[in-house]
Length: 262
Length: 262
DNA sequence: GAAAAAAGTTCCAAAATACAGAACTGTGTT
DNA sequence: AACACAGTTCTGTATTTTGGAACTTTTTTC
Image (tube, rainbow over the protein chains, first blue to last red):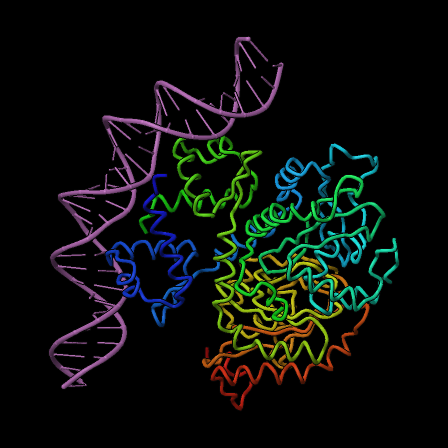
């Protein structure tokens, strides 16, 4: 790849100003090793574009409002289905199992896309249907990462109805399960929604560090054990992490710490 | 100003992709009147920087996650956020309503921080978005305290579009409203931007006596009346006055007199 | 408050870079 | 299977960018 020098310079400047807001021209000259006249010309131009903002009083520069424009445009342009289309096809190809994409809208978990297993025996589609938040992989993967107010609010509204003998119907146990999910970064459905159906699911983070979607790999106990399903964990997490990154999510040192901040 | 050609091209491309997401290289060639090889080289480079994102399947481009980085950095660089972090958390705790912090940059009102109401039903964030200056609490609270030149300049640039039946679309009436806001030190949004949404907002003064930020408490008519919202007036004003004082603002005898001086 | 130092701004010839067309490769369609 | 269309690579040429020097403005120092 032949670097375009002017873009190298541009992003060098932007990155520098990003980490050192309110910087003077002279400081840029010293730290970026470019000539004063060159930097002056570039910086003036960038101010003109609104990419940098100049404080007339202190003669300092910081990133400008035009970048907010671009940033919000990116965020709005994300259609999670589009974003995940390739990834879930890939997962489907690798696992040969049914892959679901769900998203969190209006305090509901909704299936928004899927790829069928070639072994699939069901005829109906889940797309558009709601997934119970407490007994499905996609549901638990999303809910585990919501703040406590949201969890309590949903718990209050929706009773924990037992679909199978494995359904978690105790709120306390469910919260413990959420803790495990946050730690492990995957949620299992151990025949909690439907007998004979198991799945592994992983959350998708947006740029705010919020979980608003998840992907699951589903199979049937006839053909697949939980242990074998767990072997898909790394490939699944790789998928969701890539998507999260594309959405602007920055992985922080403390994986679950963000929950307390929000 | 001597334009830097490479930056002209860059921002031409970014602006185009911003308004036309998921665009093909060929389309760029046609609409931007650049040669295919040049565009290809630039676009590859931008993908490399993360400024553009390429969908491998459809071979289309859209704005990339790097721009989210820059955008959020800009928003976070407003130190008014730090200054107000505690205050808006406190207001949120007291009122249990959504609290917004907005600031005035480049003749635009931008939301820069918020605390969600526990009752919140919306999934999207306003942070980074522009607030219309004439039909939002934060907008009116800031604009009311600008000098007449700024007001006229903004009025000339931005048409008063009716978002709801309550939107003030007459410049004269708006200026009268600004007078009331200066006198009362709070601005109300009476479903002027969105039906069913009301808010009360108060300005923040800097050490020069200029208003450059504001805080609002937002609710919905289903749950809250304007009269009840007004009961938050004193606690809201206490908050903003404390912040203004922390920023070095000295309250003078004639509360609104400064307008004529500036 | 004057002088000096530092920072910011302008100009232009030299040099480095980006450009465009052509040729080539890959992909999808009829 | 062949064709058309979109994407990719290459290279000499021409345009753009560069940085030193000179100049202006601002800030600091005495």
